[in-house]
Amino acid sequence: MAKKTYIEAIRETQSAEMQRDPDVFIAGEDVGVMGSAFGQTAGLLKEFGMQRVVDTPISESAIIGLGVGAAAMGLRPILVIDFIDFMAVCMDEVLNQASKLRYMLGGQVKIPLVIRSQIGAGIGAAAQHSQSLEAFFTHMPGMKTVAAATPADVKGLLTAAIRDDNPVLFIEHKTLARFEGEVPENDYVIPFGKADIKRAGSDVTIVSWSAMVHKCLAAAESLSKEGIDAEVIDIRSLIPLDRECILNSVGKTGKLVIVHEAVETSGYGAEIAAMVADQGFDLLDAPIKRVAAPFTPVPFSPVLEKEWVVNEEKIINAVKSLF
Image 1 (cartoon, rainbow, N blue to C red):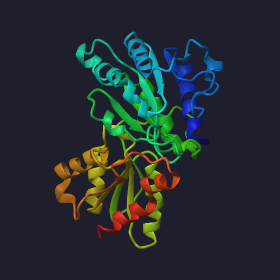
Image 2: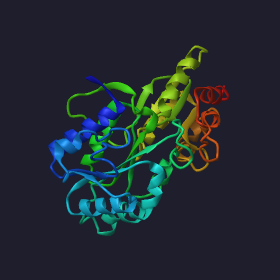
Image 3: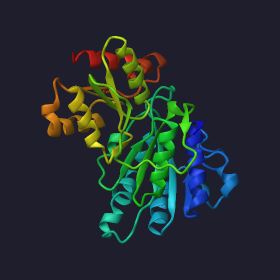
């Protein structure tokens, strides 16, 4: 194990997979000379050249269209869209082409592409650069969606995504860029649909993903000092979802709190809540609680943005309301 930052894990995983498979290439705005918005592709242009690290025009539709065509012809593109807010610009290519083409052609063509994009508020980037829109993509049959909370999970999930024969949305979080953690140095793959219990507990299940996992862990430590033992599950893979892990945990604790940064209305937490209500209603000893952002755009004002984003106190209060 070696200690690396979240960004280093992204960069090194891409490099390793490009060395392993000559069909892997990267395309997107500023991925070459600039090395991407947070340095996720720094040094890769020098290592692999312009044919495999492609600086594109500022056209999200062109980037995804390029990737779909390349994937259909047997290449394995990693497409970079900074930030997830701008996935709206290329939604036709994502929704109607990338996610549907393999099905519509009866499996005769594979679409092994990865879209890397960032979610998250907290850096003062305002309403058009701070959203968490992962729920949009969980509504697309044919599209897999994963979100890494740690450098180790970055390596395991991104490796799995690049090697997958289907389109995968790989979600990063802006505020985790410099977050450090131990990363396996050997070949490391995390299967999709396998959640991770980041903290075992017996009194309440807290389910989350991406940067919110760390706030849930902090809340769990605070709750433990008051005699509440919280289990924290990082689902990691939104589609496919590890339903069994969540249901087993709720069966043990009898209580469920779902935490995400996206606005509460139609957020992915609603899908998890509905799944547990459908398949595990008898396991519950209290109502399911969701902790999420209010139904407003992300404020630019630092004071308002801090209030908008889910924090440890809000998670603690939601948990305590169940007892």
